[in-house]
Amino acid sequence: MAMVFQDPLSSLNPTVQIGTQVTEVLLEHRDMSRAEAAAEAVVLLDRVGIPDPRRRLKEYPHQLSGGMRQRALIAMALACSPRLLIADEPTTALDVTIQAQILDLLKELVVETGTALVMITHDLGVVAGLCDRVHVMYSGKIIETADRHELFARPRQPYTGGLLASVPRLDAGRGTPLTPIRGSARDAIPWAEGCAFAPRCDNAQDDCLTEVSGSTVPLEYDGPGRQLRCRHPLEYPPAPSGATALGATR
Ligand code: SF4
Image 1: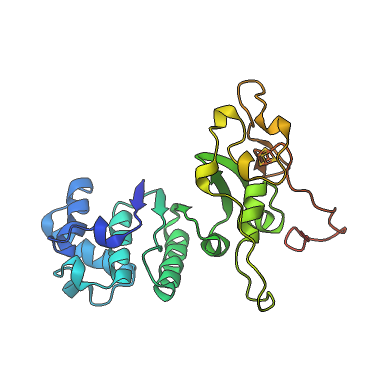
Image 2: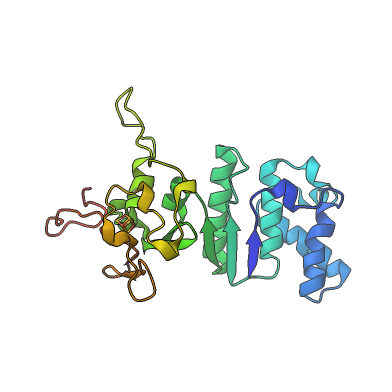
């Protein structure tokens, strides 16, 4: 397993050349000589799209742009051919253009190397563009799991529905107010007392705060490929026959 962290500037050692930081991974974990590690570092930087990798290896993190630094971190993460890559908000510190480039790079690398990618993000646009399956978490627990298309077309948990409804839409009329989820994350109650989202949920009823067989609101089967932690989920009219999940209306 390997991990790519949120802020590339603070993840890299500012006093050590990029080349030393990349080769360190190879020397520690791949039993290479210094010469072999140096040659492999060039290949790795080239693979993540860093131009002139030989020169970049001699530079310090502050001499690279934000996008380059994140590419260098991804190169380090890929150095040992991980079967699982965990990326924790890897594009949050980057502007949108570079963000798109990094997401494209991750997509390419997953296809090319067969590495599984777990993307941790608050950005629903990133989820829509990159992920196959989505696990929505609230207050430390998974509250809904589904295929990406299913989840975006028919969110069942009110928190998931609230997240999607709060995304600003370009096709909304001028002056259309945003639709936030009321309250804040601080309003969550402990799961041991009931559904943590209950204080903010428009569907909440008394049984959302009642404990059943050791778990207040268990994660349960909610149709093929779906799981849900909710007593009173969002409902949808039946899809017309032959309609795909993506074509379902909310
Ligand atoms: S369990 Fe109840 S409070 Fe929690 S999200 Fe579902 S309806 Fe709302």
